[in-house]
Length: 462
Image (cartoon, rainbow, N blue to C red; front, side):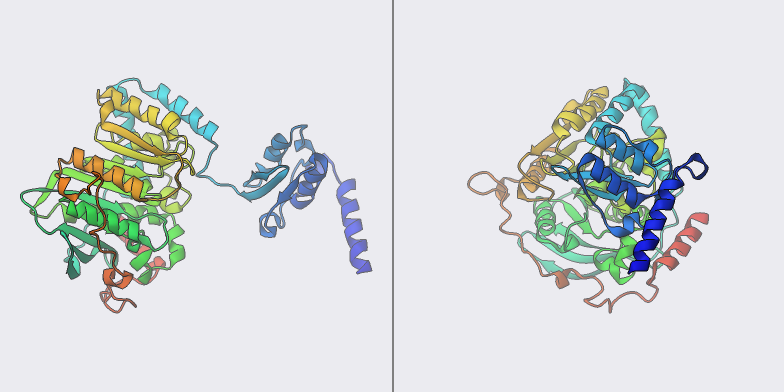
């Protein structure tokens, strides 16, 4: 122990004596953090692995009288950021490429507003963004579509609707699973609605997703909910950690396109009434798919629109679509829906808290280029949080009924509110396409991410 103390003393003495330009005034990051804590009388929390073996060049030269400026100067070279936890208390975290401050989000919107001032200039910007986004996703052109038949099973009849388990092969040996909800009785052409899943516990099996899709079917629409990549039944093929691979964003985009291809092949599908809605990561998919695919005629992104948050999962931002056009954000991407009907649902307890005063006016301006400001709506829930809860679903139902001309009086209770009580909430296994342990997986099913990468590379090469 005495030897160790002597060694540490000599080491620290070396650091203090060796502070000169020849070694770039270098100090261990951990020592610099301790120095900051002492000088500014603050407490800084961090995981050891975040600072281990890291050094700060020109360390003392980065200090300023202001604490936050000093922290920015020190940490900017380390891909580390800091956040306030309380009075004089802070934490360090890895640099979050997808996250800016609300002020920086506003500044970016102000800059983007200078790039177009009418429909023609906006359409030019939109075309540039769309082409770049397809390229960034490596889906330009789209890979060849597998010729296999869609797998369907276990059709159930409920009150006013049916449910069927579905798997679609989107690349050779790669399947996306979902639940198809259909009205029990319908006449003529009916709307189609995609419901991509978000980062909620229990995935597409959870009750709020079942309520939403069943009610869409009871309203007279074809509704389809489906898994995120490497989430839900997709984990039969890929490890859950593969969900945070950048290619997940591409796969989710491709899945949505393949699903829409299939749904629009139905003889009763109305191609003029095609909607998409999802919450959180499903909201990211909603905005992106609407921006990319003109077959979408109505969109409802939920608890995801933000000028300063691009989606913290690589499945939302990993392929760099937000770098297109020298930098874009989800507000501009959502604006690419114009002039198609769009309902934006936001709340007061996540990154959508500023939508009414910051993000929504920007989108309204874009819709105004077409003379269609009435086609975009925002319903804000200041006391609610990050979910697709009942109040948000009720707003969705009203928007769908109005824009898709759906007769819903018979679905309302005595107070005039849409009644969800007739929906059956099923146990998870009822919705499994491939069985509880994947015993029904097709023989050609891919079983690891490395094989998927090879298949995808081959598919986009041909």
